[in-house]
Length: 222
Image (cartoon, rainbow, N blue to C red; front, side, top):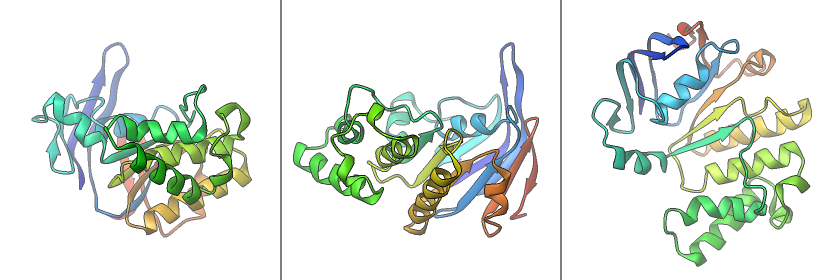
């Protein structure tokens, strides 16, 4: 479903962010992506999301390849990819329900479909009672749950998470991680980027990809 084939990525003025990285992620798999700050985790996620293209090598995602995908097809591919960020990225002037609805509205979904799905998604992440709350009225953990609901709006085949617990306390971290595991158990692949090694060690059954200075130094499935 996701394949990196000898991928390198170089940025102007920054230099080489990834060097000759190869791995595959199968449908429905849960995988940690670890490494120190600047190791290349976010670059991997951006390449999967087709926000960037590799300098060398090929990225394949859901039947699309980085060297041949057309710009107009990238938007369609991204509907299959949910993305959750450390800083939530919620619209501050919209309620929790409106933030989730926005992801559906931009695809042209009918209003009745949007209402029903938003209610179901907020209930799924445990926030049915907070549908009318604005981001500023929610805790960090609650804001991240809204962001997860939004990322699930279009039924993605893979959920990318870029340090999703980085701004949360330990209790909220455990709740958010449990939610990701539930999502994965329902069939959605998850690539969970984190530098929280305690979280990784607490889940030894999960696959681990470790980056160091842009080089893949460990794949626990290899």
